[in-house]
Image (cartoon, rainbow, N blue to C red):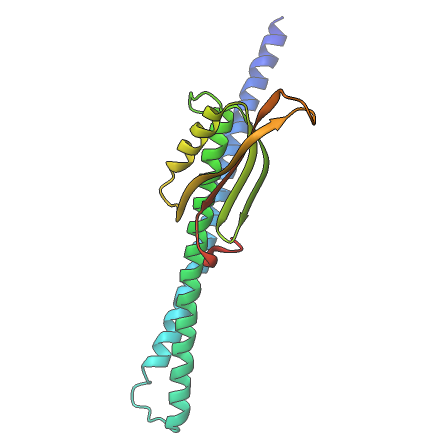
Length: 200
């Protein structure tokens, strides 16, 4: 019995040590990845600064051998800098669009699954599309109130170009010719971006 207790205590210590080692290794790995990303960013910043500096400032004491070649190099360097700035703005815009899309989808899922103490909305999603900045959702709800609650939740997102609207709603019948409705088929559309948001 005493041997069993000692083995259990030893196993508990070993498990605790393994957890601590795993956490320490994960922390070191995370710090290493962050450090590597910082080095990459510093290298890119130094390269950009070098391109800008060498294109704009001539070397002290050096006379240009060919003024037209220097003018062409200056023009090329300015074009490169402008292209890099445009690419940076484009990447920042795409990242902001991705975050907005994720936020809208999270609001949709929250209403569907009833998170944060909210009662889940009774509807089923049939199709969900995002194309050229336009969201289109089609689904079936048990009651019109469920569709209203969903629309209110989607309206809370502040970044809409065109707020969500109920485009179509109609009764969905169980069987063709049946008079007992299964629910309400609804179609909601909302515009998040113009044409520049395509492909996000």
